[in-house]
Image (cartoon, rainbow, N blue to C red; front, side, top):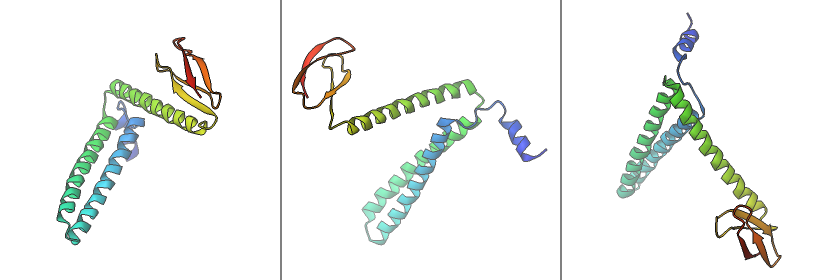
Length: 154
């Protein structure tokens, strides 16, 4: 039996690689690369007789390296876990948070794009975000969520 077939049989019933595992993998690699950079910086500080800075970068190395190792262990645990239902629930929560973050970033981009033609503001009662055309003076606004009426300057 080939190695590939044995590996496929080994992975049956296990979680495998999902979006959260990919994120953990990338984050651990980034942490380890940053830790290596801190090592080089601390060596450069020692060459220039900056022992205080070298100590700080050495501590940062240990902290970031530790975080990278913890993330790598979590990644390995998720990939080889047999509790697929729990791992899928974790991945679903991760996907929901990523989607929420992407929507928020898209909203900020849209506000930036429309900054010259629209004024964005919030309802004072329910905090619903709204917009109105700029340069219309004082206008009366009715909130679509709570039906509160207030006056704002555009």
